[in-house]
Amino acid sequence: MADVYYAYNYASAGWLLLQSIPLITSPTMVITLLSPEVRETTPLEDYLSRSLGIAAIAIGILTVLLTGSIPLTSSFADPAGDSLQDPTAPYALPTLVVTGTYQAAVAFFCYMMWNETGNFGFGVSTIVGSTLAGMAVWCVLFAASDGRISRKTGADKRTSGFPFKNSEADKKRAGKKAL
Image 1 (cartoon, rainbow, N blue to C red):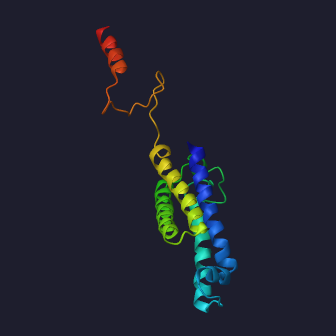
Image 2: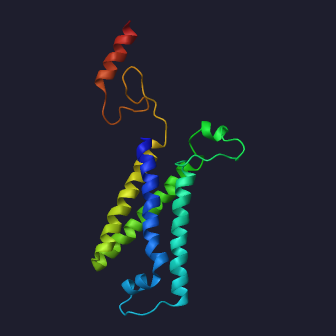
Image 3: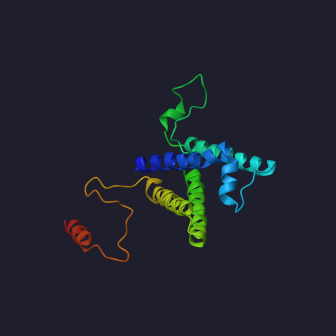
């Protein structure tokens, strides 16, 4: 389960990095693709494009750091401190929820734009964003909590019989009570 969690963290950061490259390197190209007429960028458009690209890189780096994908120590002098003993980061779940919500919102926006324009780029962004949002939901549901797996049966002890009844388990329980 941790493999999917780390894969999501690195994929989310990589997707943000990939999106930031054209914003930083060539704001003119981005404006040309978005605008019906070809023109040079204004200083404000140039500033906003590059600032957004740098912010996307910062969010990607924070995602990897805050989720515990890269173990960090609290000081340089004590590399064998307590933080290495506990590999989970305290901000892992909140960061996962925020980035998952972000990916879902961007996927929804890209889907709406894809329906309106039919642009291939919006379609690709919809697929990637939806995949990342789905991975985040999976991680929140299944990788965020320690399962209570039975040593005898291998089943999760937190499951219930609602709405279906587990008649085999009831037979085993009745047999143990009779002894």
